[in-house]
Length: 152
DNA sequence: GCCAACGTTGGC
DNA sequence: GCCAACGTTGGC
Image (cartoon, rainbow, N blue to C red):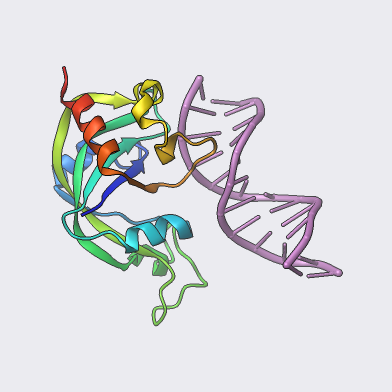
């Protein structure tokens, strides 16, 4: 059992979108470190869903891994923004996982809340210049964030 | 829109 | 394998 934090720009794909469609393949990750994290994710792992590049960046709710890593179909789609000519179907370069809706937080845990909390100091997303869209979260960090999100 | 902090690319 | 140039991310 692992915990993950996954970023999405709400303009592209928001938590409300996930709530609507229930399950969604997490495609378009084109960073090797983030890809490797996704490859190590297991079914049932919990995902903190983070809204980035928006007015109020923060964690807005919980999702779960509903399918382990498989080849990201967008890498072979010439019409996709994420098309990668160097990736071959017999040796796919990029993976994705499927993510399922779990629950919306009572109140979002904003980036500033994360920053202010001493027990979340080592959260990877708070490291300067961190740009990974998928990062691991420890059980302690997860518990703290869930607690914050459950408060009104 | 700015810009810091990265990752990636490609020439050598 | 080095490293400069370039592209991207994402908070502000």
